[in-house]
Amino acid sequence: MTSALTLSSSGSPLASSWPETPPGADPLPGQLDRWLASRGAELVAVRRHIHAHPELSNQEFETAALVARELAVAGLSPRFLPKGNGVICDIGEGERVIALRADLDALPLMDTKDVPYRSTVDNVAHACGHDVHTTILLGVGLALAQLAERDELPGRVRLLFQPAEEQIPSGAPDVIAAGGLKDVAGIYALHCAPQLPTGLVGVRSGPFTAAADTVEVRLTGPGGHTARPHLTADLVHALGRVIVDVPSLLDRRVDPRAGVSMVWGRVHAGEAYNAIPGEGSVKGTVRVLNRDAWREAPELIKKLVQDVISGTGASAEVVYTRGVPPVINDRMASAIIAGAAGAALGPDRVVEAEISMGGEDFAFYLEQVPGAMIRLGTGIPGGGVPRDIHQSGFDVDERCIGYGVRVMVHTALAALSTPML
Image (cartoon, rainbow, N blue to C red; front, top):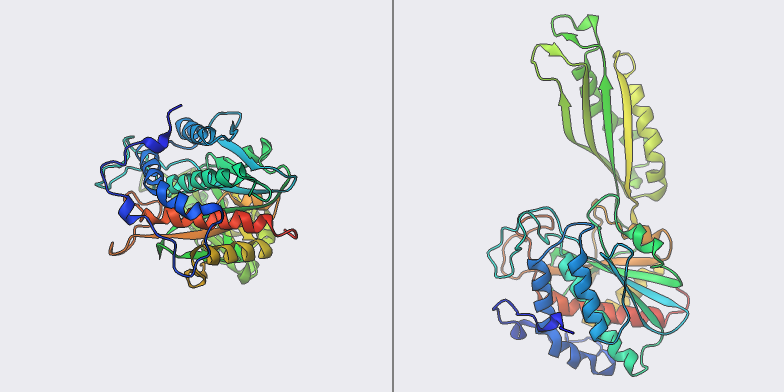
């Protein structure tokens, strides 16, 4: 069986940039530090291969196949999700399971970087770092397999390689339906953070990312001449009231500590400048940090729309579509991964993460079991203003792969040895 770890490194020297064990860090058990150092260039080569061959949400068949091949070569028994675009793999034995999750999919963006591993697929790019997440979790799996072979893994670790994080409906519910959380006591994940220097991680207990829903308001009326708005329903005026007043009123109907943000992104009404249209619409996002406020948002927004257009003569239909819940990190799980990150990298390399109003479907797992997500610094030194995720030129300092593997191996071992989680 051919291993992807023998893939070309795209002509760039890798070994010299692979990070050594950070000063003040605890060594990994079973000589894993030495093993990790010897496999660094190969893991970077895997990341570059995935980066050059991205797959969109629900189409991650080749990426999943690559992951499954590598795990099988290591003596593990991966299984595909029913659609074949995701992988679940257990390592070790025991009734209690700690799960680690990575996402596989890319974004529908052009890759504008001038690098040897630039995307070979038009308008598809790993601009969110999922290639890094996948490579790190693969490295963790291969490292933990070394411990399991020597009966030095104190429990069972489940690797979840998830499809479709970037799409609604997303892939986390499919993983859960396929038994991904069966017997799981806790779950952990990391996400690339270009705002943080490579070698740092950001940890936070409580709200971490926001719920992300979409709302569309469709207004209808008789239409008419702009010279005689009193004889019809001035639909554009009514839309303007929805656009301005609904977010403003929402801010005053919800506890400010709930972190609610309503922002419109698309509006359309009419074609002729002198004709009042008979229909129009506005569509945007609703983001919420508080779980209770998120659950109440649909009905409240529908009522506010009706209140705002009352008296305009227009009729309204509100289509509210659930996206993902908020990621709310468990307190104990956050403490475990913070301690593990400090052991992996040194305590001075663990910082407090900022709250993000972006959405993450890791939240679906946290609705079922306790867990935490952290931010992994990927900032490129000397690169000027870092490219944010979801930008076409996004890239990472590849030393982050080694740091990420160390953090997640320490996390798995720490979580297995913490019975209260």
